[in-house]
Length: 269
Image: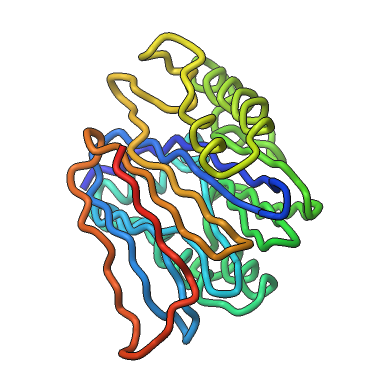
């Protein structure tokens, strides 16, 4: 299996009394997706599952959300080549699911940073009260930043705490910088979840420009958007039907008689 480059935007923002995290998920392929609702380590979780690569990210019953965007260039090249050679799927999906199966922010952060070598890239781990961002690659040790309760933070695909992580030059670096700046400006004006997601798919340049937040280039397309409402425990998936190979629906693995705490909303665009 060929490893696929992931170029995404992740956002964390407080709007009124509501704290959300959101993501534009960009892919060079059409993924098969499903939403999974189950217990992990006895903790209720809902997460997006990319069946193609086993990638996952989502929210748990304690209002802890986990989102990630890649720094899968340069220093991560050897890891990419290994995956391509062996045909084994990325282990980050397993790491993120284990992180979601924790009852406290502290334990979630520990798992994200250490379990099976830690999650690579930019990782946002947030509750309604606090955001911790982690930046790491296979050649960079994790760097942690604690953000304030009302923090509005955006990450794309270049290093923030590690200057030489991710894209560092050329058109891809420019794209990452412009998409980050655009997302900061437009999502900063959003007053609710719908406005936030609409802002993240607003075209500011020509339709196929590599600088747009929602990608529609010949090589890269935004296949879905995830929004995690950490205040009201809502998992929302918006997926672009033409950019997804198949959406398999919501897979519920909860025990019989279990009363779920997390609400799921799915929209086809």
